[in-house]
Length: 282
Length: 294
Image (cartoon, rainbow over all chains, first blue to last red; front, side, top):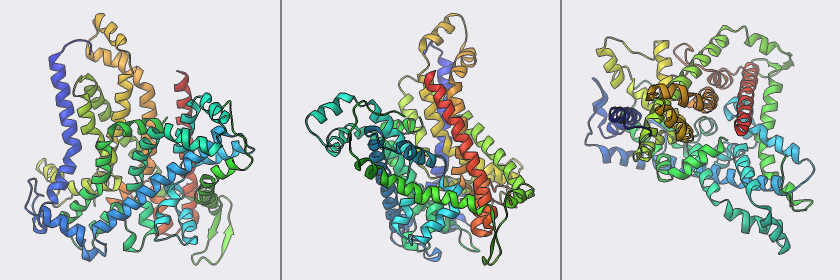
């Protein structure tokens, strides 16, 4: 700060506090709604102060779910989301780090072609080629399975690039020393590159976990069996009950539970998260 | 393309290492994308019994279809509004947070978490707040004399999805602006202050120009976000309605393909979208190259 301007400081605080409140307001209301009974949403305006049904609502959702929507209990959906998010995060990191290793530490024919083929995936989000991708997954009999939920989303050029950029900064002397000591390429990878990449892997893991957990369109299309519903797509099925007012209290309990895991991950690992975010975009 | 000075020699190993990624890329990316291109030149009869090759007829039909042209227009309005709203508010917050010496970190924590909230979840929360019967926002608007109803009024529906989509994106823009602000050398601001420039003047003559690379980058990223990642916001709230007034291009591909089963048209729309994404990605990469030199 250049000069001391108390009024400007106070003004900045006011702006930030207003910003924080605006950002938090929807979540606050969702939480309040999840503590009320179903009758509080019939008329008038929604409640803005906590109600007495906090434990009832969450317990009901976690153990039974909403019977009328045909959705499984929430613990099941959260478990599915967790499996999908972990498979996507671990899978992406595993295949990306291997291919980045090959691209940086080997010279082989068609390397340029492989590089461009991977690069193209950066440009094609799943939403724009949704019909044909769905057909491929259906032909492979992967509908309603964890493999179908995660594998099509695993290919990632961003992670490959991040690892490639990082490997290029690893000193050549390490490679030379390992070769002198007679290490095979895979030994070098396991004993030197992998430990050095630890922070990058962790940062990427945070970003990819959130990406995986928050998937919506893909699980919506390929799961018809409620046993494979994920929590983020399940909210919509609960809110859309035919010819009735949604049961706001339980829908909002689901909203809170659906956002809790990724938000906790971001807040707990803020430093890694910021690193991952800023570096994958470069 | 760069490699190491020292490389390993092995005839088979590198292929085994790239194989998993290439296999997945081929099966789930290149093959479907190719299918979409091929399908966009075909016309299938309603029973799926006969397909004929029709050259560019699907594209020609697309660009005279008033609904598609309307969707293009809606998408432009939506993407621009989301970009302006979320970049603008993030900039204000980042400039304020940059002034803080001790509390900057605390405010950052309090502002970044919405990044982790799924677009669908953000959509449902705002949909609840604006619910015409019980929502608090519609209640307040009614007290101000405005009868809010996003299931009947196209403008209300658009405002709702813009707000929900921007809310989630502020944290992302905030982080990039804060990093950009912290990279500006303090000496520049000090020199200007000694010359008698006040905070407002310094902001417009020094800070804003130096932030322009960040702003440009964020503008592209936010456009891509608004055009592709907001599918869930729309599907979870307005479902493209009322009467197509929030059916952005991505939503229309889904709607025409999965619900309307107009395969040729949906494929042609996919190809148009791919061209848009590729253009935006190339712009972004050119910026990165220039930025690195600078």
